[in-house]
Structure formats: structure tokens, C-alpha cells
Amino acid sequence: MSTLLVRNADVLVTMDASRRELRGAGLYAVDGFIREVGPTSELPATADVVLDLAGQIVLPGLVNTHHHLNQTLTRAFPAAQDAGLFDWLTAQYPAWTRIDAEASRVSTLVGLAELLLSGCTTVFDHTYLYQNGNSVDVQVEAAREIGVRFHASRGSMSVGRSKGGLPPDEAVEDEAFILKDSERVIDRFHDPRPGALTRIVLAPCAPFSVSADLLRESAALARARGVRLHTHLAETLDEERYTLERFGVGPVEWMDRLGWVAGDVWFAHAVHVSDDEIERFARAGCGVAHCPSSNMRLASGIAPVKKYMTAGVAVGLAVDGSASNDASNMLLEARQAMLLARLELGLRRESDVRPGDWMTAREALELATLGGARVLGRDDVGSLEAGKCADFFSLDLGAIDYAGALHDPVAATVFCAPTRARLTVVHGRVVVEDGRVATVDMAPVVERHNRLAAALARG
Ligand SMILES: [Zn+2]
Image (cartoon, rainbow, N blue to C red; front, side, top):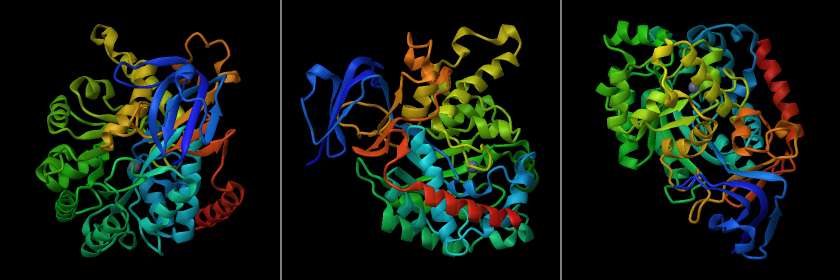
């Protein structure tokens, strides 16, 4: 049995049912699960690991609901800096097709390190290119090494350019093999138990790179095995044109016909949807990964996040892939979500804006914690309360970021843009200490990563 005690945090944000924000508080955890949360004086006096967090704010670990960690290798890629989704993808497919097992490992570590340093403790990654030895296995091993809670996709692309898809033929895989490998990685890695550090998700890439058959078969396999489903949807008007031309219906209707508008599915982006489609999502119980920075970066549009929330759709936040953000900072993403929702108000007629339409800082934090947990189908993360996983992070309230805002440090965590966690703990394990990754020596990883990225950029 291993015990962990957090003491004396200036503020501890619980995200529990009554959204308590405790002063002079901490928590006590046993074997990675929280036993008690409360004022320091009411907690046990000692533990195997004692963390005195005076001068800091503690929050539940952030949950990232959509990423492409391998894309750290093509950040700020010259040919893709100023392009919308389809041109951006087309410019990078050849480089991504050359990512091998080693490049996948180091890019996964780099992306995960950046997330951990911004307080993110649970990560979903949507990889869908497995050429040259890249595999789910490589990524799961990297995630275990660095210590993050990891939901890995067995993603896929099966419709290449010669069959009318967007990706080049050498980037896609055989459908029978995709399904076989999906079963293999579920058998090998998927852990359905509470507190699981590794789960598998089946995630065909997008309507313009997989077939109807693969979507149907993936859903059948996921449902037989009790794993969740994910894909990109309604990200851009390019995509809407594609499904209208090829399938005669919009993206949401297309997915609905294939059994994909359902409670075990969440979609990345879901920017271009009608009010009726929002209601369909709510009725079906499917979720949305909102990626504000990426949607701005690629000029995709503004997702109707407040409408989703009002309708009861589960919404989580995501930094999206590292080539369309190009940062993996969850704290900044929460701030972008708040700001983008407000920009949308400014684009409406004044008479169409009601006070409740404003996204608050606390709502943005809720999307980044509880919202993400709901989207990933987890009731054991996203808040700090007895029975939940000991996943949390702290920020230094003495830092310049908070100066002048200590009357409301919780709101300031979104408004004032602190970017670096001082401490990050996943399942009771310290993974970031004093603002540095504690589990992996990142300097040689970054050096290797830069060499591999340079080689990809050279072509
Ligand atoms: Zn994506």
C-alpha cells in the first residue's frame, strides 16, 4: 500500500457535485485513489509521500479528448502553415507516411510531456497512420514510461486517392488487417477497470478516408468488445461538400446511417452542425471534442459549444494534433475555448445574445476536466473527491501570471494564462516536479525529435 498526502494548498478546486473550492486544503490518497479531500487539519498527518503545496492552487488533472501526438514532428510545417484542412492534410501526408517506430516513440513522449507540463493527466490520442513499424504498442509503451493516463486509438485510413479518398494510397491500410489489429490491441492493452491507465478506442479517421464498411465493422467490433468509438466529423465545409457529393447527405446524417450517432461515440470538432443535429447528439448521448485553437488555425469555423452544453451534449476540450495548434497546452486551450465562445457572441446581432450565453472561466475549466471525463466515458477522473483517481496538478500563485488576480485565483487560471504546472500527479505518481518532467529525461528525447523532424521537413 502506498499513501500520498497533499497539504496546505491555498486553493483546491474539487469539481465535485457542489463545485467546492477549498482554502488551506489537501487530499489523502491510497494506491492512486483519493480517500479524503478537505482542510489540511482534517486529513491524516503523514503519508509515504507528503506534498506541501502552500502558495499553490490545486486543480483536477485536465483531460485532453483529441490529439495526434505524432504530429509534433511536423509543427509549423512550412507547406502547411497557411492552409485549410484538405490542403493542410495533403501537404503533410507524405511526411506522416514516413514516421517509423522510433519517430512515433519520441514524438509521443514530446507531446505527452508538453501536456503533462500544462496539467493534463488523461490523454486520448488519435493516431491513424501505421507505416514503417509504427504501432499502438509503441505509443502505449511511451505513455506508460512517462506516466500519463492514456486512451490510445487504433485509428485507420482505408480509402486512398485512387478510390476517391483524400490520402495517398501509400498512407492507407487493408481493412481486414485494420480490424484484426484492432482486436489484437484491445486484447493486449484495453483495461476496463476503474482507475485504468490504458484504454483502447477504435477510431477510423474521417468520412473522406475510410469506407462505410470499415465504419460499420469498427462499430460492431467496438460494441462487441466494450470499447469506445471516435472519429473526426463536420470539421470543415470541405468535408460537408465531400459527403454531399459522394454519399448524398451531410456528415452527421452519413454517420447516423452507419450507427455512429450513439452513446459510445464522440466526435472531434463537430463545427458545422444544425440545431437539429445538436438535438440528435443530445438524444443519442454522443460527445464532442472541442478544439478551439485548431479550428482557428485552420480557419475551420466556430463550434457551437454553448449550444451543445445547453442541449446536454457531453463536451470535452482538446488541443488537437500538434500540426494544427501547434501547442499541446491544455491550460491555454481552456482559455481559447472561453475566448472563442465570446468572439462568437460578438458576431451575432446584439439582440440575439443573452447573459447565459457567455462562457465563464469556471465553465471552461469544467469542460477541461469533468467534460472531458464524460466524453471519454470515465467517472473516475475529472474531479477531486473520495473514490476518484489521484490525478491533479498545481500552479504557483506567486508567479507573475497571477499577480493582481489573487482575489479569484480560479478564474485567473483561465483569464491570466498561466502555462506551466509546478506539479502534476497521475494516479498518485509524481510525473512533473518543480515544473519539470520527473519520469523521463526529456533533453535527449527533444534532441532526437528535432533531428527526426528536420529529416521529415527535408522530404
Ligand atoms: Zn484531429
